[in-house]
Length: 84
Image (cartoon, rainbow, N blue to C red; front, top):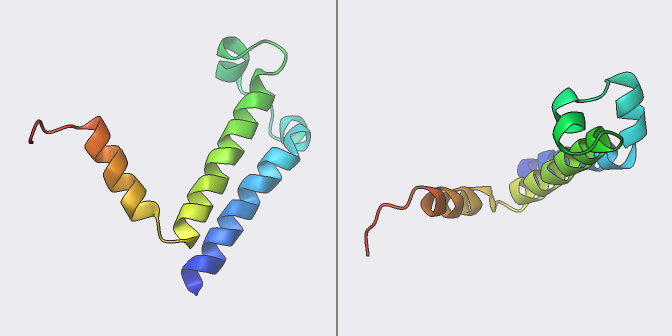
């Protein structure tokens, strides 16, 4: 029950980051790397929205207890051992 509540809270934080992107830009500031590489006008907005979406997915995976399965799949895919 605790994982579910914590996961939903994490997902909600990500939702707020996507929903109130302009507020974060005004109060936290622009991301120089994002402005340089993702576009001069909307790079920071895109970066905040992508970060928020990743936080939402992480929160939902944590709430549904899929984070361990995802991490093992991801690590096996990145660091292939060559075993058959």
